[in-house]
Image (cartoon, rainbow, N blue to C red):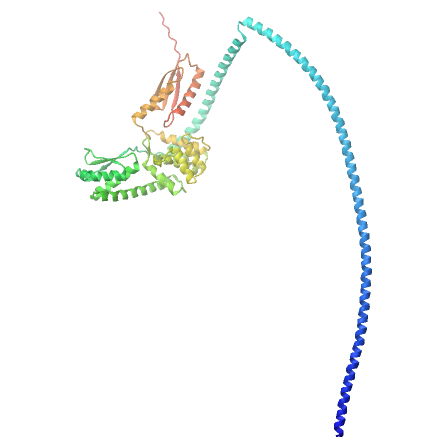
Amino acid sequence: MGNTLAIILIVVGTLVGILLGFVFGIAYRKKVAEREIGSAELEATRLINEAIRSGENRKKEMLLEAKDEIHKSRTEHDKEVKERRAELSKQERRLEQKESALDKKTEAFERKEEELSKKLQKVAETQAQAEEIKAQQMQTLERISELTQEQARQYLLKTVEDDVRHEAAMKIKEIEQQLKDEAEEKGREIIATAIQRCAADHAAETTVSVVALPTDEMKGRIIGREGRNIRTLETITGVDLIIDDTPEAITVSSFDPVRREIARLALEKLIADGRIHPTRIEDMVEKARKEVDRTIREEGERACYETGVHGLNPELIKILGRQKYRTSYGQNVLNHSMEVSHIAGLMAAELGVDVTLAKRAGLLHDLGKAIDHEVEGSHVQLGADLARKYKENPVVINAIEAHHGDVEPKTVIAVLVQAADAISAARPGARRENVENYIRRLQKLEELTGSYPGVDKAFAIQAGREVRIMVNPEVVTEDNMILLARDIAKKIEAELEYPGQIKVNVIRETKAVEYAK
C-alpha cells in the first residue's frame, strides 16, 4: 500500500513537473518571440528610413542631371541658331550681289537692244535700197534678154531639172553597176556552191494515173453489171475512171492526187484479188486509204530525216508528207521543199547564218500547198497560220509569209528562203505550164511593157524570162532609159506572176541615113 502511494506521488510529481516545464517553455518562447518581433520592427523602420533618404538623394541627382541636360540643349540650340543666322546673312549678301549683277546685265541688254534696233533700221533701209536696185536690174535684164521673169524662171528650172535628171540617172547607173558587180560576184559564188552541192531530179506529174490490166476481160469485171462496180468505186474515191479502147489499161483521172493514189492502189488490189463487187471495193478502198496515210507519214518523216530538220510537231510532219501528192507547175512540192531546204541551208552556211533554222524554214515554206481547197486563203497565209498553230519559230513564220513577197522579210533567213525558192523553181525542166497560160503570160508581158509612152515595140523572149523594148530615141532620152527600165521592172513585179526572174532590156538606137548622088 505504501509502495503504491509512493508510485502515485512520483507519477503526479512527474506530471506536475512536465506541466510546469511546458508552461515555463511557452512563456519563455513568447518572450523570445516578442524580442524578435521588436528587433524586426526596428530593422524595418531603419530600412524604410534609409530608402527614403536614398530616394531623396536620387531625386536630387536626377534634378541636377536634368538641369545639366537642359542647359546643354539650350547651349547647342543657341549655337545652331547663330550658325543659321550667319548662313542666312551669307545668302542675303549673295542674293544682293546677284541682284546687282542682274541689274547691270539688264542695263547692258537694254543698251544692246537699242543699238540692235538702230542697226535693224539701217538694215531695213539698206534692204529697201537693194530691192529697188534689184528691180532696176531685173527690168534691165528683161529688156536685154527679151524674157519676162516667169519665162526666165521656167527656163532655169528646165535647165536645172535636165542637169539633175542627168546626174541622177548617171548616179543610179553608177550605183547599180557597183552593186551589181559586187552582188553578182558574191551571189554567183554562193548560189553556184549551193547548186553544185544539191542536184535534185524532178519528175513532172499529171492529173491522171494508168492502171495496167492483165487482160481486157478485166475491164468488164471492173465495170460490173449495169456499171455498179465502177459507180461504187468512183463514188467512194471521188475520181473518174476512164475506160476506152486502150488495150489492157484503165485511166484514173482526178485533180486531187491523194484521191487518185487511193483509187489506183484500190484498183491494183482488186485486180490482184480477182473478187470485184461493191462490198469488196469498199474494203479495198479503206485499206488503200490507210496505206496512203501511212505513206504520207513516212514521206514526212523521210523529208525531215534527209534535210536534218528535227523536233517538228507530228501533225506538221503529216501535212508535210501530203506534199508528196501535190504539184506546182508540174513540180513535186515535197521534192521542191526539200531542195529549197538544202539550198537555203548551204547558202546560210556560206554566210555564217543559222543553218538549222534556214533548213527548217526552207522545208516548211510551202506548207500551205498541202491544204485542201475547202480551206480559204492563199498557200502563204495557210502555211503561216499552220506554223503559228503548232508554235513554230517566228523566224520560220516570217520566212513562210515573205517567200513570195507578201510581207517584208525581217531576217536574212527569210531572204535566203526567197532565193532558194526562186532557184529551185527556175531550174530548167523543174516546172512547166500549159500552152494557153504560157501564151497568155507572154502576151500580158508584151502589153504591159508596150504601154509606156515612147515605147515602139516590146518582144518577150527566152520563154518569158526576158523582154526587149525598142524605144523612140526622139521621145526617150538616154538618161530616161535607165529610169524607164526601173519603172517597167517595178510594174512587172507588181502586176505579173512568173517563176524565177525577168530581164528587162531597153534599147535605144539613133540612125542617120543619107544618100550620095
